[in-house]
Image (cartoon, rainbow, N blue to C red; front, side, top):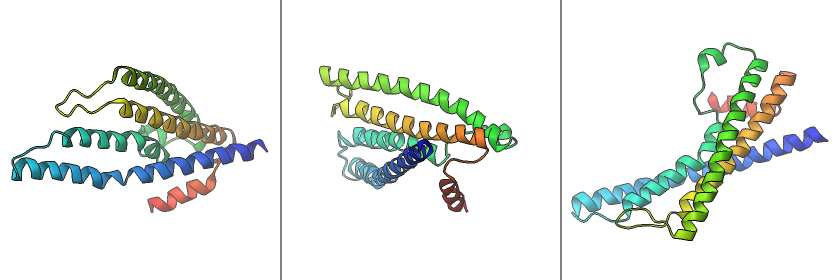
Length: 184
């Protein structure tokens, strides 16, 4: 009963993070379009926009931050492979327990700070210091949401690593099989 609930939690997190990671990837063409329009306006029309730079910064921030949990899910973050690849799956699980716990601690702090910054940005109407001066509250809200997503993914990974450290087997072997098929 408990293992079923844990598996459902991990599978639910996997599904949510994959959906958001794939969805945010559709912002890449929009980012390219904004940058291309600014280049066209600046160099062809000789009339640079006041909004394109800030817009491209925000879009890139959204892609990077909201894609962070997806990158964690896909194991795209940096790892110390020289040691990690030479140990057993159980010891890899122990390494992951330690590193995921540290990452969760850091991201919880980041989430708490970003929520405070969001409230502050709303209260004082913070704006980006540029000619266009767009509001900043949405940025801090996005950082908080991205932090929660990353905490969810890291907690799911932590649970999987704990299971792997104890049993020597992954908690969700079907996800591991899908990932191996994607690598080939």
